[in-house]
Image 1 (cartoon, one colour):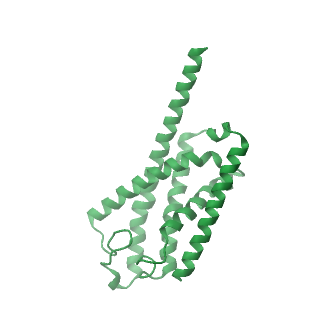
Image 2: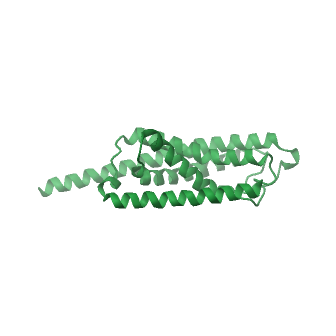
Length: 202
């Protein structure tokens, strides 16, 4: 009996380690694609839409607007990948809290992540959303990064992990629903904050 318990514990530990590795890999890929490649393309679009006088100005993220250097591109790719790995680990921690029909399960996490991360990325001071025109395009492209990243990490992670069974299903239902309510309130706060910031920008 003891041997069976030890084997079960070991198997469970290996499975959780596998899930963390999968989430980190999926997150890294998502960050590289959305934040690295996508972010570079978004910067290119904004640079083309704006007055040449904006070229050379240092953005709030430390990148020079309109100038695309190898070192800057590599730095963006690396930073985006690291943040993607972190995002992947957060995703695997909350994926078991998804509920409802399949379409809502697929939409809820990207939507919530976009609101929360967008509230942190979009601000009414600095140059990113005051110097660059049109401001709504800058906001939309900025929000597109966490949205795309979350969609990619969820798609890859779900395919690679397979089972929807997580630690949340082993807990009392009240615990999972308390966490869902807390995350919903957090996303609601982020929505209000984001809407307020956008109104200030406009």
